[in-house]
Image (cartoon, rainbow, N blue to C red; front, side, top):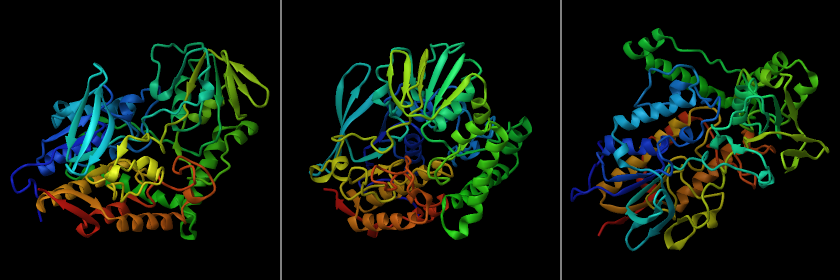
Length: 502
């Protein structure tokens, strides 16, 4: 059965899309191509599209998902240069895609949404926003809101570094005007960004003091180049790219077993752990350094990082790896709790992002004046990240229970957009001003999520960005991408309630 593309009076809903990264662009494209809707507007806080891939331009920045799985399924890219695409290529792909679908005319750049509130009498969302170039404040009424605000957008900068008197910046705000050549540089943090930055600058700097709080599991990065022949075959041989795409997808999908503590999944988990152990043994000969870089938690609890040049970079003579806790800074010096201090010229923070608290209190007000963040905190009542009982017509495209540790998040984004498209079509077919998921459906989903997570590593005693402060898994959906598709392949009207248009 086809999709209903207009209300009975021939009109379409007014839609606001927040964010012009992968999520927001996917929503805009599918609104156009599947429903023929042009009555939407995209709000982007930055001066160009790209989201994470516009903001993060640090040396070595690249995707840790295979390139051909890191593109929209409906808009494949046959010209990736490598198995793992660098930041610039991903950003250029997004720009080409946006131009192809004429999205630039629909995007308000340097525009920040400051407040979003549901008006029950209007059956609409009221969005306050400000033009960051002019300071002009405005308001928009929208029937439907897509939230494409990704979690990797607000840098986390610990207060103890605010007193540093030299050049300091976060990896997501890279200072390209400062020359690191022959400088004494400190890098704080040991996640994916740091693991990409360190090998990219280590040969340039005089010394590199590397501050690691928690060691990461590293697996080899086989970053092969795609030759002209490969690109020709992708483009010209029927189904060749499709088959290749599926092979990459299913090989990544299978690795979900490595995150399970169940007996039947022991072999994949042991293989992955052995690979991480082997690369440490081969690339780090110093036993003391190797011990510093050996994780003490279960594999998969924190994000597994792919890299083949990280360990060799840390073995260089100009690198010092510190595991003592940082207690503060004084002038140009980093102070540690073991009594030592290191004077440096520049400080680079790879300290992550505000993943669990990316929306402030007062930003999102739902039905009945409920402050969604204040009421539900870091345990929002969401139904597959799509909507909730107190937020009608609001679709989270990369929100709670969406992030992944084993495959491409673009698959999750596409599936949630497809589900939202079905919901909007259902609204127009039934002449509804709004739809909201039932509280029962939400609670059933959360209970199922909690139950499924009991057998997964994220529910162990370790701490990671997949969990909130209470140890509850909120930033990761419990199972595989294929399971996610299976559950969301069909829109279930019985799980929603609607209000008729007047």
